[in-house]
Length: 168
Ligand SMILES: Cc1cc2nc3c(=O)[nH]c(=O)nc-3n(C[C@H](O)[C@H](O)[C@H](O)COP(=O)(O)O)c2cc1C
Image (tube, rainbow, N blue to C red; front, side, top):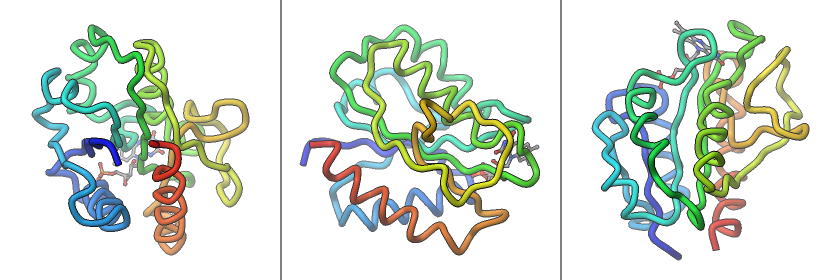
């Protein structure tokens, strides 16, 4: 397996818990965790495979820490690099912006010629609209700890199995 960077906010509560579970599912030593709160372009360019934790904040926006990195990200040349994005959201509280940040991040990355992998089915979710929807699927994994916490473990496990193949 190639070098995979797992980027998320070490200070987040819910996202961090999921990121740690993803790490466990991959197996010890398979991923390298990097704090998205202090990420630099140099951190990014050390990897050719990425998992990004991007929860949705502020009614359909990126969290502050990712937003601060966007100007630098938009300068990077990411051709040939593969990204998988997971994000927490709240489909009942924010049905019109469910998991939007996953789609916002995917658009930025594909705009830099990166490949975004790890799409998932919308089955089992109930929401009105989402920027994460691309051709009828989520362009990543969206988890809803507010309304569907008991579905998270299986969703994470299935996604990690998919990534193990798609990252090859
Ligand atoms: C002020 C606020 C705005 C939010 N806006 C959205 C939103 O637009 N879409 C969504 O799916 N979830 C939204 N959420 C839900 C968060 O994504 C969810 O609580 C998530 O678990 C936060 O993860 P974190 O604590 O790791 O940052 C919002 C939560 C808060 C408190």
